[in-house]
Image (cartoon, rainbow, N blue to C red; front, side, top):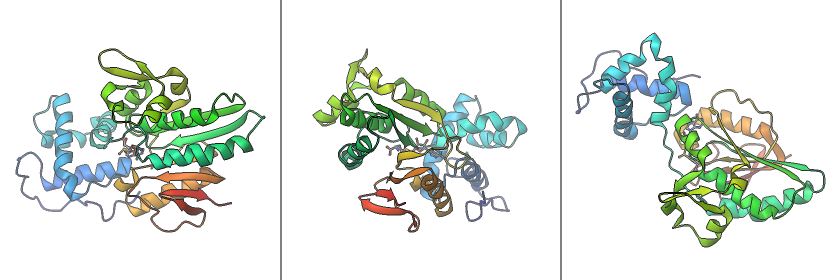
Length: 291
Ligand SMILES: C[S@@+](CC[C@H](N)C(=O)[O-])C[C@H]1O[C@@H](n2cnc3c(N)ncnc32)[C@H](O)[C@@H]1O
């Protein structure tokens, strides 16, 4: 992937940042590495936050400064550190039933249509949560669809939930969350999630929802191992970290994996980088794949 226009290292040495730990050259080096590895563009207003996150890796590795960490990343021994670097710089903010209108559309419009089309033949329904973070999005999908399916047992229903961040995926798979995370949720959402009491202020997503979801590591800018088709793809609140070229290429690959008539949900502040001939906007950040 080309890195033109993204934080090219400056040729001459520039002064250290105010905290004295990272030069402009090192910041550019980190930004370029993160872009090459994950497609994430570290914009200038996010640099201070990034330095803070790198400090966590400095501590974990027993180094003395972020500058020392950058020097380590430039050595041949650093390959194993790259996933940790990416884990450290990703933003994982998420919530159960975030952007509720997507789940209402899924439960009221999409699932009834799919259940009717696929009735009686162990009909296959596949949904992909493609930047799932700690799992709240995938479990909200599971809860919505389980509720829509009721006691139907003639459907082969699965959710694939993927993220680049291995630390957050471990949390997602466990399905255990602080109990107070659910307090602000509307009562119907809490009921759909079928929460089980955990110990010490924790709550666990019920087993019958957890088993609908498979969590896997997947980097959206690398090759994808699955062949689809998917009936629904969620790609929410990750495009904001990508540039236009990366978004366009991922969108083309989403379209290729979506069934005709399938749906793509983007995040609240996201849109297509340019109109796509096979995607029709049918609701707030909801796109339908045309034939
Ligand atoms: C802000 S969270 C969004 C979570 C959820 N989709 C939502 O809207 O609530 C963004 C997620 O994208 C993931 N991510 C960033 N770059 C990625 C990439 N190249 N491939 C896959 N996931 C990526 C991050 O690890 C993070 O968990």
